[in-house]
Length: 161
Image 1 (cartoon, helix red, strand yellow):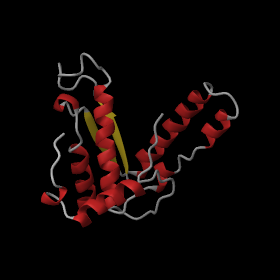
Image 2: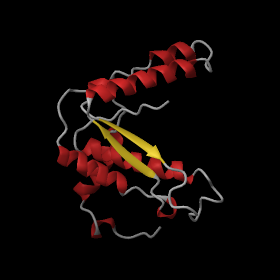
Image 3: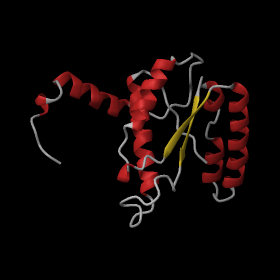
Image 4: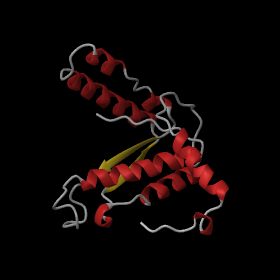
């Protein structure tokens, strides 16, 4: 990491905007049923693709799901998997886990399914010694997605099973 005068690259206002976006990022659970413009979605996905990845493997894929029929099926699958996973928790954690809201899957105008391909890129520098680097790289892309969405005024809720 090199140290340089930040003013050579970004104005004070640009730096402050970045910090504000980072500090105000939240996991959202209630969504407006307002369509998200395709150009905003494009900028968000482009930002996600700029995430750092070990050996430039970029193991992620982003699947846009706008169809309410498909999102309904996705929610049903999540609900089934959530019930199966609940057996691994003791009370009161089990009740809390089962109370977590999944309605955002249907309430939001679009779902973005993010996948991680552990074999993309074949032999990648760093993957042999730390196999989890594909997951770490995907998480970096997700963070970029989340911050870009926040910059666009769009909420993101992370749902995983």
